[in-house]
Length: 390
Image (cartoon, rainbow, N blue to C red; front, side, top):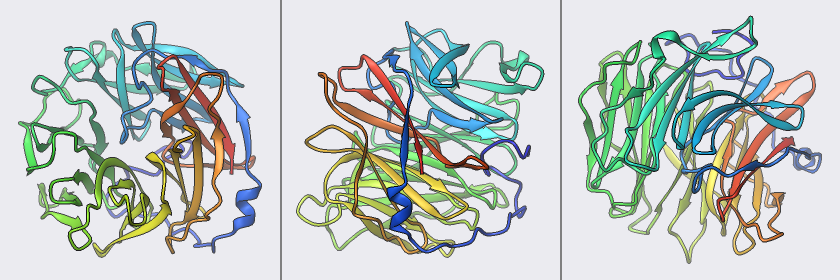
C-alpha cells in the first residue's frame, strides 16, 4: 500500500504495523482546536451527507476528497485551499455514497434516492494528473444485486484479500453480498440475521487482520449485534451482541472505525432515554469483549473518527435542541470522554444541521493533526464543511 494514502485499512493479513503509543487523555489538547472554514456546497439530495454509517470524505495523496451530489448528478470533489472543486462525474443521478480505500484505489458505493440500481464505481489514482480517474474497465457503473425497493443506506468494506462486501437491511433482514476483483460479478445475497425492525441499519468495518465486521442495530431484541467474516474459513462467524438486562440499548445510529491492534469502535445512539448514555461508544476488543462508554446524554446521529497515533477518538453529532454539529474527544484505550462539547457548525440564519460525516482517520503530518467534518442543513440546501485542527 502506498505510504502517501492516509489510511491503514484494509491491509494484508498478519501484516501488522507497530501498535501506536497509548497516550493518556489530555484535556489541554482539546482546548487547542482551531476550525478552518470551507465554502459551502449547494445541497443536491435530501440528507445528502447521510445516511448514518456512510463515509463520503477521505484524505489521500496530500489532498482531501469528497463524494457528493449536485445538480442532479454525483461528483468527486477535491478540496483546493478553502473551496470544493469538481473533478469527476461518478453517477448520472444523485446518490448517498459510501467509500472504501483499497490500496491506491477507492470503491464508491452509490445508493440512489430513486428506483435506479445501487451501483459501484472503482477509482484509481493517476499520478500524472494528480487526481483519481475512473478505471477504463469500470467506464459504466456496476449495478449490484439489490432487490427493489432498495435500502435507504448501505456500506462497503474490503477484506485483506481485496474482496468487497456490502451490507444493508431490507424487510427486517441484515443482508450482505460480496465480490472479488474486478467486482463485476457478485455473490448471491446472504442473510446475516432475520428479525430486526424495518428502520434498523447495519455497517461494515475492515479490520487489520484482514477480516470484516458487520454491525447492526436490533431494536426488537434491544441490542447491538455483530458477525465477523474470516477469510481463512471463507465464512461469517457466530452472532455477538451487546445488551443490558433488557434495557432498550439499540437505536438505528451506527458509525464504525478500527485501530491497528484489532479493536473495533462503534459510535452509537441508544434508546436509553431515561438512563445514560444516549450517545455512546461501543468497543469490541480483540478478545471479543464488548463495552459501552458514555459520551453524552443528548444528541443524535453520531459519527466517529480516530487518531491512530495517539489513540484519540472523536465523535461528532447533531446537538438537541440547538441543531448544531458538535464534537467530543475521548481516549480509545480507557473509553473516558472529555465532557466539554465543542461546537463546530453553528445553527443560525434559518439553517439547522444534521447528518454529520467525517473522515475515518485524523490526518497526522508535519503540519499537525486535522479532522475533516461536513454536514447538510435540514432544509437540504447546503453542505457545510470544516477542517478541525485537533
